[in-house]
Length: 295
Ligand SMILES: [Zn+2]
Image 1 (cartoon, rainbow, N blue to C red):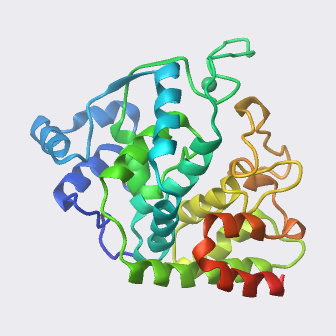
Image 2 (tube, helix red, strand yellow):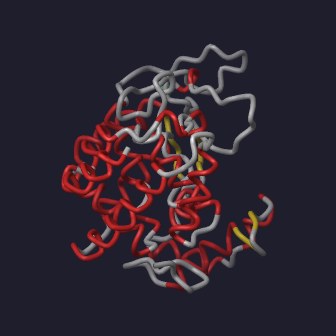
């Protein structure tokens, strides 16, 4: 259940290192201004780096990032990330939340060269990344991972970071997975009971209620369900079904939404994609069959 600590309980990272990381980016319930992020004491920075909670800047190239993403997808086990996602719902281990969506996107990503049709030519039409990130801030990715369960699940730049950390991480107990599975099935059943006029923002509210989670965490779960094709539409599929190029990931002009592609398009009549759920969580087949019959 939800941690009562000010900072997430993350193992094997220690609370001092996590506090240093959070204090670098977050203050009084909001993001710090960019200029204030450099105010971290050198001894704190070194401690957090030695601990593996913060990271020195890293230079990324598009080609290397795509190669690394595809390689991590090949090395990462589907059941392990599915179990971690389920366990995250019971334990509030946010670092276990994001690898599932990252793996689904990574498995659909194909090797490609940078191509940009925009006037500035900044971002790749296929994957949405820059051609080159000099001295990129890696620590902010860990902050997003531990606070929100990640926010850039479709970004190869984030995916490489997230899946690499997952390979270093401990694994949930079967008890944590079972408890999380019960929570997850309740969320799915409650989505099925939403009124016909409901949309993705109602899923966010529903998740908040079930998990006693804030809007950021709940939005993250709705977005992961979209990315994994559980909450998708025929026109706007999730990544389990198809890799939609970054230049084609439309967002509705109205109603305006903070949610990402494709869950932003989901409405209750689109239903829950049980075929996707059975692919992602084959171990839950009997429970999912029960839910599906109630659809
Ligand atoms: Zn690309």
